[in-house]
Amino acid sequence: MKYRRLAGTDLDVSVICLGPMRAAAKTPGGDARSKAGEAALRAALDAGINFLHSSYEYETRWMMERVLRDHPKRHDVHHVIKVPVPDFKDGGRFDAAKFRLRVEEALTDLHAERIAVLQWMWRSEPNEDALRLPMLPAVMDDVWATFEKMKAEGKVGHLMTFPYTVPCARAAIETGRFAGLIAYYNPIEMEMAELFPEMERRGMGFLCIRPLYEGILTDARDPARLKADDRFREPRYAKDLARRARIAESFAAEIGASMTGFAVRFALASPLVGSVIVGLNSPAQVEGIAAAVAGDLPDPSLVGRAYDLWKSGFGLDG
Ligand SMILES: NC(=O)c1ccc[n+]([C@@H]2O[C@H](COP(=O)([O-])OP(=O)(O)OC[C@H]3O[C@@H](n4cnc5c(N)ncnc54)[C@H](OP(=O)(O)O)[C@@H]3O)[C@@H](O)[C@H]2O)c1
Image (cartoon, rainbow, N blue to C red):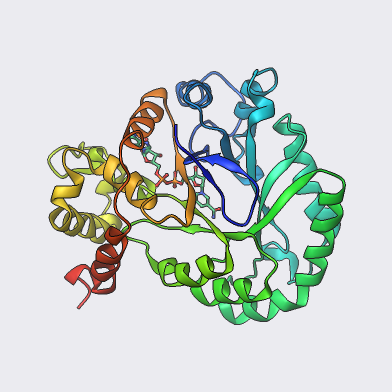
């Protein structure tokens, strides 16, 4: 496994961060999905993955708890957790007790002494920039004070944020409070790439979420292999599959035998990206992703080429 210093922090994290959103049922049990997810987490730790993403919202921490409670590597793990305060229905008000609760429950559930990275989020209803942009300066000092207090207690390490949109990302960067951003990033979702030079200048880090675009950028979604009951056969995914086809054409040489491998390596082409948060639901998926990042990573110039394709709307939007 490769490791990178996550810019803006003192953390050396595996370039793969396991995301457990779909890796277990929402209630404890011995169903096939949960068993495979538990085996995936064990395989990930065995493969040297030392970075785990989680959220109380996924309701899969019960599976992580089972693995982590007595795992010999649990003290080596860096955790990143979602902390949405204010949440959608909080009317824009920051609640320090709720912020603390999200951390304390994670410390307990994950058998951790510290949460290395907080993925703080500020939400509104509707979750629009018109509401969220003025909310940030209104709550920022209270968020920072609460974070600093918990940091002094040794419970948290670094504050990053998931900004949802580019204008909110810009506003977050301008506060000077965040070690980095956490956002969607893959050849179909390149919105945040325009901020990379500014983030690099400021020494900030970036964690990429859903490098495989929820599974569309994998070999299983090759049109020749797509199963009759595949969830991406629904009509709402037709445009995404068309974008995938354009990517397959444009980067045939780099993709070679595997779109999955290409997508995960693509996310790491930019040195700003400390780690990719990828949904891994079985030991086979862990092995596949670990093998994909074992070799050489692409030249950063790949990002510029992909950005041009993305900016052109993949030649499909006109
Ligand atoms: N707002 C947020 O903070 C936010 C939002 C979304 C997600 N997340 C986090 O990010 C993580 C990743 O997001 P995601 O799962 O939506 O997207 P993703 O990582 O882009 O895609 C994961 C999917 O790709 C497939 N896959 C994984 N490894 C594979 C392999 N080796 N070979 C072939 N297919 C493979 C699996 O789908 P199949 O098993 O169906 O093939 C898996 O569910 C989540 O688990 C969660 O922790 C955070």
